Length: 472
Image 1 (cartoon, rainbow, N blue to C red):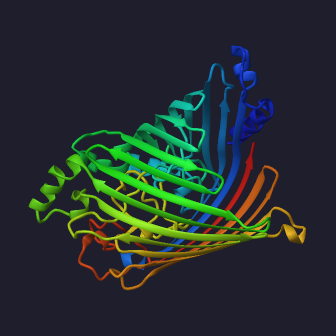
Image 2: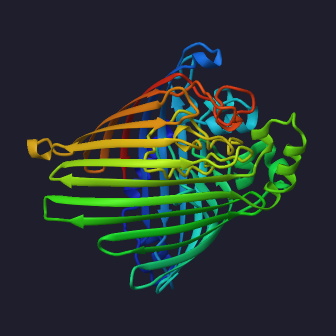
Image 3: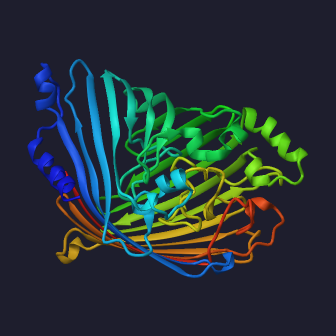
């Protein structure tokens, strides 16, 4: 672990040149750019899963690691990049929180989220790609960390998630950008392996739901932006699984140097396609004893959201509302988000069903994404530069998720204190969640704690995090 940390530091000093245009093979490297971070992470998670017949649990973890990447300069528009990623636990207790280590490895390899494999650190070549740019064209292929609404890096643990595939886009001078891509593998942030995107989402149910052992996703998108507006429209097509459409638009207005405000709208529709709608779904209807959620992949999920925010001097306030719409009882009408995208405006740091994007959990749903849920979130951020203490800020966020299928609503409270100076930051986070564990509906898609249910909720969750990060 010490050798890895020293190597990260040394490499940051050796390569200090910024990426630029190269005139020779030698300059591809001498004018290249090194980037990365060194991170320390502590996490403590306390769970009270009384409704699931389990006792209160407390788990801890310490880890150190980060990323080390190098991108060559461009030569005739062509460049290459690689990024090494690592997470290394230390000072482990008898009960380990594997969410900053190898949880996904453990689920995939030994069926345990906290077993021996899940507690092991790992290193992985998370990025290795070629990128060609010419005028407005940009085409890349390989392994890469990407951030889109439904396939995302989700950088709130030690290292990010990444994909394997490619993308071709063209940017116009008027701010319009169009593109399409191909994704066939996904590396979850707690895994050392790039797994087939269908297998990562569905695990042992992959062939049952899609009729095949592997697959791919074709993202197609249109984006437009100017000084005051941003609009995005995405379609993610996964053959014989589902088609996902996502839209958002933002308007920002600066009144003066001290005051700005913004409003935003979003919407999404997921729908089962091909084999997932026909053979698999019909089989589950024919067999009345089959567990609906594990067999029923006839996805039909929709939501919309609204958000407003303002900033005055060093204070920021935001308010958001989302509604997940229900559909037919025999459809999986909760949102499925297996590739680390969490687009809801009301999304919090931690939701009631943790790690729905882990291996094989693609048909599960967390609190804010369950059919029929209304979400309300308010957040307030305060900076303190006016006091002379520069780089310090606090954040408080509260979310309320209400669903008529449950007896009580879920409430989430997040408190964050952060300090940043230069390339170094230190963040303290506190998370408190009270869940809607008792249900009233007969729809198995929203039942909690029952065999085959699409959610597995706990009564209460408390979590503390300490994150020290140095970027270079």
